[in-house]
Figure 1: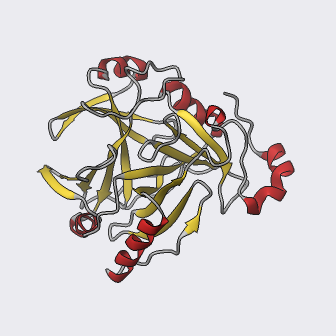
Figure 2: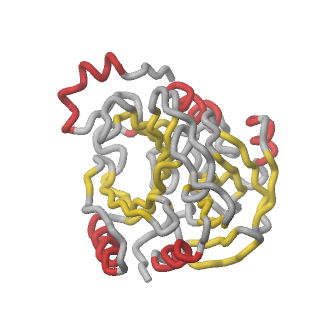
Length: 305
């Protein structure tokens, strides 16, 4: 069993409109945009990052807004819901702020479920004792603000193989309730809950706007990441080499249930090329796309804060 993974690092999804996406996360949820860059593989598309003050691991929701992308179809083989942790006693505030919410109890926790602009599945869960500081510079008061992720729910035809993989990665099964199995990372970073929902009769998900592209797990550095890669490879996973993503190093592999996993480093962080006071303000380009700046600044959809 691995001991290097500490919980989630980030969750990356797809959107249809950059401005709408930006407004939802910064103005409605009150997160900070910590980076405005482009997709490494498709530089004509933004890669937007939202999180806490510095973009700490376990707080960062990221998006590829593809203009004219088709809407995703919910199903199995995907992360169907991303849950954020909020302070105890704040769900009433969020219910009024968000408007259309569905209240649900799962494993004894009250959750507010709601959708993002593209039908993205989200939930808010009160997390007593969460010491992570919400971003205080946005429209949401800090005493109601989002701490970061609580975890994700994966929708699967069968959970057995994915549960075994997560246990190998250091998670422990803590409970079962109906179609759900809960796994928790002991001593994690706060973003340490994975729920597996079994839907044997559901169709496979179709990726599009509102879909999660991949979910990333946090390790401290490249050395720990290399250890995880070696162990996963020896266990039979097809894992990519370590890839430099400017703000973290990444490895990727597809899980038995179809969900794309990433293992990402906490280093070097989002302040490697911007002062912390100005994170997410300027368009930052990977070195291989720097020569495209003039064209990209003219063709990328302007985002107003």
